[in-house]
Length: 245
Ligand code: NAD
Image (tube, rainbow, N blue to C red; front, side):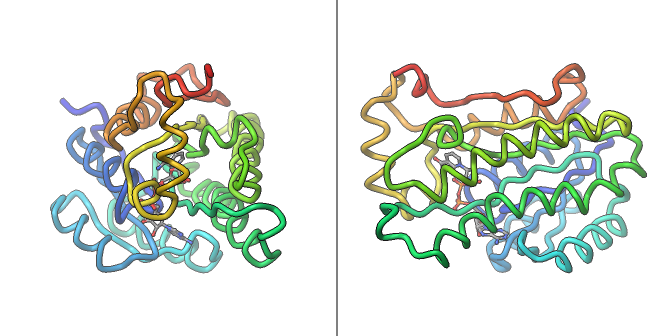
């Protein structure tokens, strides 16, 4: 028996990195998974690898019409959604002085507004399902200010506020909402987009290494499953001890 038997999950940013790892574990644990991303070719390839219990739809998390269309399509595929993982995100490492308003707003729109829209547009589907678990992916950069990360840190602090608000508002619908704060995880984000910054960060991590994406997936799985039935509005850190130093 799988830990997610009978559940339908929608994951954003699932074409690669942590989102793809979460999708693989969810399918292995019995869920039907709707993978979404702006990267169509990569997303379709991961869904194809996972077989008939997975499908892919292009979804830009900043687009209200994309959310409306994809939630409807997901329901047609597998039925009402029980689990939403708001995982899509982008990073930018620049000083405040170097950051243009347009660049700042791009990060806020994807990392923060995308989470708001995801919860807003999946809620009606979860109400049909009569229960749900929403897992928002923030970051240790949402717990503590970091140099060169003004937009990223701001967006991730906001995801905590959105999580607490939604946790309180969604109680009547039997929907739990929690947030995860990963530390340095080996994905294209840290090995390509923020390479130098991640390498510098990991020097001070007590466990002295980055994590594999799968080491976050196991926590996401716990929160998606009924095993976490008494957790809502909570924050979970998976960072190799980074916040201790
Ligand atoms: P990644 O870059 O490998 O994956 C992010 C995915 O989000 C990509 O597939 C990308 O195409 C997608 N995406 C970007 N913009 C999008 C949009 N507008 N709409 C839909 N999808 C979009 O990065 P990752 O490391 O797997 O990151 C996953 C999440 O974890 C992000 O929210 C990130 O901020 C967070 N996080 C990552 C780390 C880390 O060390 N890698 C640490 C803390 C938090």
